[in-house]
Image 1 (tube, rainbow, N blue to C red):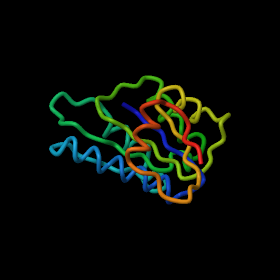
Image 2: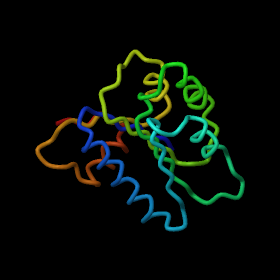
Image 3: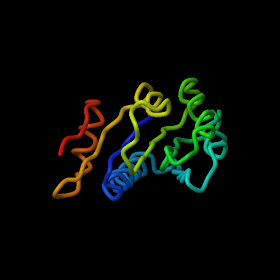
Image 4: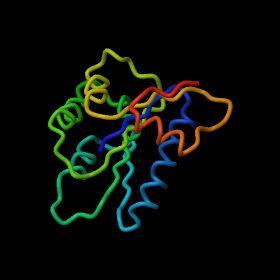
Length: 141
């Protein structure tokens, strides 16, 4: 399953991602979590880790800041999303407000469950976040 969380509040988006990582670790203690900061890592590192593996255990790949890539470097990521050939759970976190007319946003919106997280007076709870993602609706302030 692929999920996409984004919003202008960096702390809220990263905290929601961390909550989902903890939930994954609790549900899959033998599984692994790998984080990719695309401001530092390359898309090829992520694509290599996302490749299907017959003998792998459950795994969660967390991709942070996919929109920080220059436009030409996003093409392999868009092609991956369109092909969707992976057995891993993938969580895309964008701690900014991406432009909705970009190809990467459209690919993520089409292939993932997404939630836009806004500033709230209190942090969003794990149960509220899971409810939002299960319904496939946008989070509201």
